[in-house]
Image 1 (cartoon, one colour):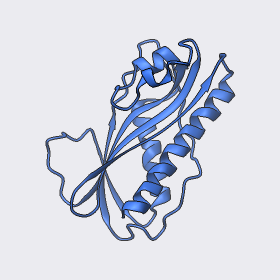
Image 2 (cartoon, one colour; image 1 turned 60 degrees about the vertical axis):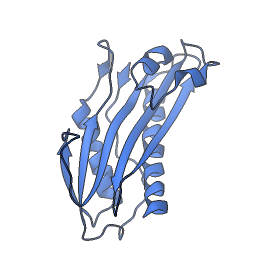
Image 3 (cartoon, helix red, strand yellow; image 1 turned 120 degrees about the vertical axis):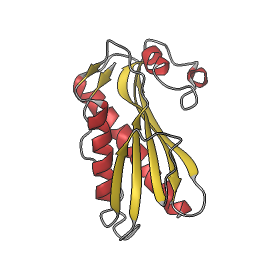
Image 4 (cartoon, one colour; image 1 turned 135 degrees about the vertical axis):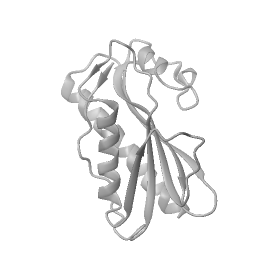
Length: 176
């Protein structure tokens, strides 16, 4: 399994959305990476990249960042909880084993050989902007029949990260 540091990507800009508002952002790295994972960066660095992207997307919002806040602790006001469920590249069977089945159902990919390669991002969100919270899962995968080189795997991971973030922004647009 490989983890590359996310690059700054082109996300949708929402300069007036949440302007002047305080939003608590709760970040959790929920990945269960195998011990043999080769990581170019830590989970906190991946989560930091998510925060940079949120600040780039919503530049006029005040984002109050919290890491691994106790799930039982009440949160007042608007918030976005982000659980990083996947941001990695590797052999499909290792990829599937490292993810909560709630967010990734390997049985739905029975036709994909276990020795194929997968690059993917899964972000699980809980968002509360008004009355009650709602949930959204953004995910994107790229699969390869053969092992690929580092630049191709990095590109696939970057594309999955960009797509997942943009899906989140579009979801907020529809539900705001």
